[in-house]
Image 1 (cartoon, helix red, strand yellow):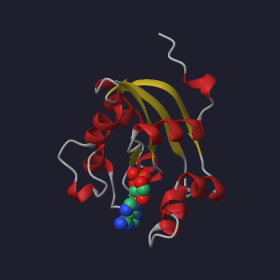
Image 2 (cartoon, helix red, strand yellow):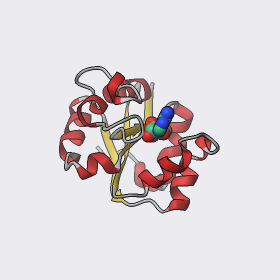
Image 3 (tube, rainbow, N blue to C red):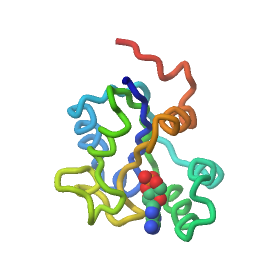
Image 4 (cartoon, rainbow, N blue to C red):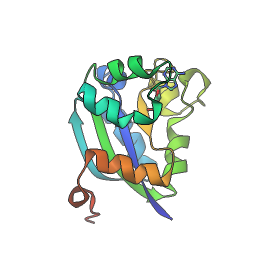
Length: 141
Ligand code: CMP
């Protein structure tokens, strides 16, 4: 099934100047980029995006980190996008991620882990619409 996933290149990876390499890996893995933007989240936006984690020990630090610099948000589409993207980026903790995955290559630690991918089809659609309007994510080729 063709699925959508939201990718976020996080502030640590943007700071390492590896946006181009990460985008290239995503394209080479067969994902189509439907929409993409470099932006910076406000505290309110970061809290809303990570609402599901509110109350967890790492929530406040996560919001601080995600608002600490620019991010790149991308709406991606592919057959089996959710699982395939999670394989491409690797485990949440870069230390546990497989060799060759984006988090292994560029993640700093379990919080500053370089990149986000949606964890279900439902969240893929919800998260894409958090950053992009439905008119922006239409396939045009
Ligand atoms: P992400 O895939 O964006 O989803 C939630 C984020 O919370 C995760 O990546 C990490 O950035 C962060 N996170 C998850 N677990 C922990 C943890 N145990 N300690 C610190 N940060 C975490």
